[in-house]
Length: 193
Image 1: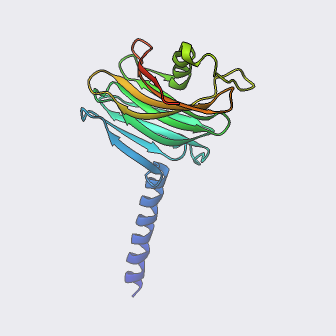
Image 2: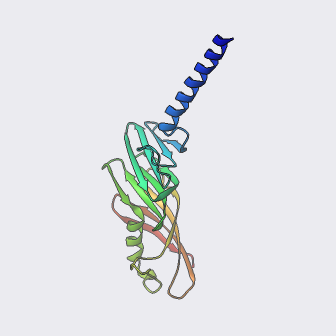
Image 3: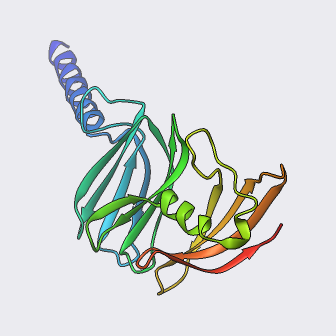
């Protein structure tokens, strides 16, 4: 009987240690796991900062393993979604920042860098002459617009976005465009309203 209790106790200790090990590696905090289209990289998103223990719940971590290896932690933010480009050269991440609101980050795996894509999108829309009369700014003199990523354009590296904003005329304006990050240009710009 004592031996049976000792075996059960030992098994429970091993199970607890395995669970603690899995927890400390963030395995219970996986929000999304995606393989790149070329199959060479697996990206895992954790719903907290798994680079320190105890985990910071007001952050999330993106970890790449495979052809590209790296870990990036975004603090004071929440993960919304991510999309690999068809050629596996870029990854687009939608982030909900607790102070600044939603914005897109583009990971460029060719040049090993990351940019706030939303600021680039603001720049290309600001240059659109048909929007000049409608553009509205916030107290920090930033263009107030919501972007909605729809899809990557196969093989070109372009992204298709829809957008909307409330203009100076207090009406909602909507439209769409394709954006090419490699040369920071837009094409096929259309205003729906």
